[in-house]
Image 1: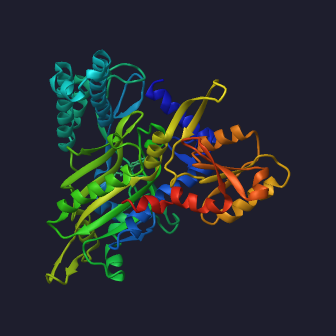
Image 2 (image 1 turned 90 degrees about the horizontal axis):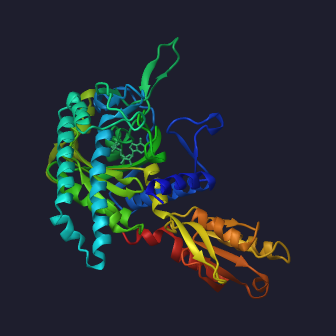
Length: 516
Ligand code: GAP
């Protein structure tokens, strides 16, 4: 099965098991907008909790904020979004389809990378156990040629984007003979800029109305509250403000399920530092954020940093944490050293002083900012794609079976424990419900009495429930149950009074947080 097929199955699985639904499906959907179902909402909340606790509760000098989506329109002028929050778009004249020029080029870069991986796979098959990947990468002329093409293309694109040279972007597409995936032709229009902000009107037209924007990032809500939080919280630099909230972008190329959406959620933290120290903090946050990701246990090799060649005009360093999705390495989180750009702009546009007085050095300054910014939905997709496994099983009688299992980190799993009476009589359902009543204040539990135990296990595997408990006739007599582990499928007899400790040890978020 190709990675593309795996991804298609994953998307279908998310819908079939109540994780993610297309928005407005009853009316045939709304492009790049999605709803989270009963398990999706739980998983999303757990991801947000992992981030919030790691950022806000584990750092004495980071506090939270929940700012409004609607903000004064001048904020977006000051931040540069009105003038410069654009995507370079190109249309194919034959298919009439519209693409982001930089995305078309990035896909071409990914093709060169895929060719390298193909060369390596071929060589591995040829040389068997004696294959030395590092040596092959360094010495194969074919690999070198593909990497040289990739690097040259990356450099040329960065140059064109930095210079805002739309003609050159088009020329790259022509020179690389990039074809439209729909028409297969290179019949391209010029490249044009397109602003990504959604706008609406506030106030009735009779009174006169104001054009306002749906925020395209949560960060500006933090910047404009810098003084409020600093003063009321008596915060001393360095300190951070963290926020989780919705953001909106009129993405033209909205593809790959919830990877790129028009309405999505961000978890952003702005860390305010003394000018001159920002690059040290940038390095610290890079490592801290990578550790947060890697702790989930999806394999360190599946993450990498991608330092930006094209720096936004306000940044003096920027990197992405990328994860190896089924469709290749892609950004999950951005870490940006944003200098004093945003606070200076708000000082200029509002006409109000935004400065920090450092009592130790007796000086006032506009703080510099290091930002960490991650999409909740993209993180959700990362977690689900890393957890999705189709497994072949051999049953006790030697026959084959298959199961789909979401090997979610237990702390993120929507349901921690499923409780199943073996039969729907003899007091077993009541006993099962008693167990849930004991545990439900600390763990999300689910009662399930329908179908055979085997089918019930499969249903729980498919939603990633780490533990299932079966209540049988012995349970009534001796207060013990069988607990089954999702990953190993092994079963063990334990006392009902031990369940809370087992669940706490294996599924509590604190277990993850303590390792940070
Ligand atoms: N304040 C900085 C900022 O917004 P960004 O790189 O544009 O930076 C940060 O976005 C993160 O938000 C990305 O790494 C990604 O996880 C998420 N994100 C951005 N656009 C998105 C979209 N259209 N759909 C889903 N997630 C998105």
